[in-house]
Length: 92
Image (cartoon, rainbow, N blue to C red; front, side, top):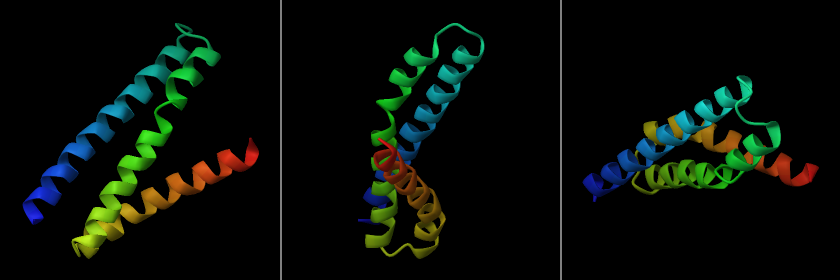
């Protein structure tokens, strides 16, 4: 069971790293005026929820599999993403 949890966690982390690189490239294009702000926002906004889900899945898996140290490492990132999502929903 542990091997499955860690393999899935590794794949999820790879997807999150890829998503972070995509965010940086898109923001770099915005900075260089290759795309406008509206286009940049529409590209990045559709990936916010999958990012939140990815971090939450890793955190819950580590909690369920009783890996406390890794759970505590992931908890601040997941908490920040949930807080950011709640603020976005309140401001809309």
